[in-house]
Length: 632
Image (cartoon, rainbow, N blue to C red; front, top):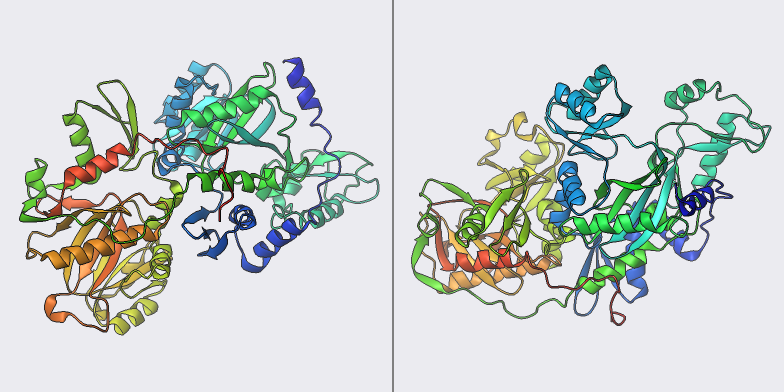
């Protein structure tokens, strides 16, 4: 191990007294968390925005806008400037590992396996103890560490697979330290390490009394106040294996771990050590973020090998909690909320005003099947059409998993996509499109007409809504994919049965009134294409302009959203009224399924695909330096 690394680690062995957070900022953020239940990461970023003149408009407890005269900057939990594509890539641990390895980042040896026997074979290939974990997983669930015995590996595979086939087997690193680093693709901004739940003896207090005293201290830290050390069977069993009980009295100064479950939420402590860790740890974190397409910002979990001092990346995380660095129990705090805010503002742009550009009404509607070599009965998505266009341009398509694919150009550049999204599509902009209840609130604030809707959890609530609206209603999950929601149509109250609400506790229901229906693909500046069912009569120019402008307004309602497919219902001419809007937005999606029989009635699908593909070549500079001047 290098002398520098040894010195760094030696300086971390004594934590001293825990930090106190009695300053005005910490007290205000704690109050927001206690009184309003607000996410501490979002509140910390919002505080920095407010210091630069933003008005705050909270939408939910973890989502808000920082509002200026010319723009809104969305804040969502601990998200920074990472793209939705990057979030999807790091959600596949095996793919992320392969990308980091290809970029020269140190990662544990290992591979994906699809059976318990394959996992045993992988361990034999690695030749030492291994870790088994789900390829798609988080929070340490389903992880087995430091095993070599075939029976233990079989058991670990079952735990990690949970009925699914994707499991990662990788080299177990005998570590001297574990870190969470927060970094952009150019700079490391914070590093902290997690400490197991622990107490320090005073010569007269029992273990349980020391835990209670420690928990009282934890209540004064914004990041640990809701995470006391549990006094439970896990703690008792852990202590018993070390010859202790809850009634044991520890000698003065003796430090004892009381659980073997790591993490702040499990009662552990965080120690900020950015100014103490070696440069290779920071450089490895930066390299890991840079290796992931569109990552730009993330939380990197690293370990340092006890024998060699080499830092290895275990995984990269999106929406990575900043509390451990911003409000560490020990060590000098790093204001990552301010760091993130400066990056987010630097990436924002003034919002468009005025009318959007409207596509030209076609003389004769074109079947999508005719335009893209599909049959009328074939179902196609925008990602299907993107891949066909790229192949026609000489690109080679590589499917990495169900969602992630890339296109290798004739010039050997690689363009990365998550479904239809790329590096230019921020995760914070995509989130509301997948949350109907949040989207409803965003459209309401932006005065975009929408059908009557609400959240329902019981059959009685659903029946009452159906009685109130007096029309057909569609029921969909409160969370959905990038495509259209898998909705269930109810035409009368008598059709409601218990199975309709099976599988989830939260549903979104909205009125589905009769009328003309259009899917408008729009950006904040322009409606590019208007699609309608083949059985629907061709619309007039006035109707196209009406639904196209409404669609562009819906896209503008969501800050940073680059484009969307907007489903619009327009009343039949004979049902027009001055009392209610004649056109409403029913849904926003990004990769809906179209029938080959659907008709393009205005605009150009080539223009749509050009927009989607061109976004894979972002030209925005890195925002680490922040805005050149304070926002007004």
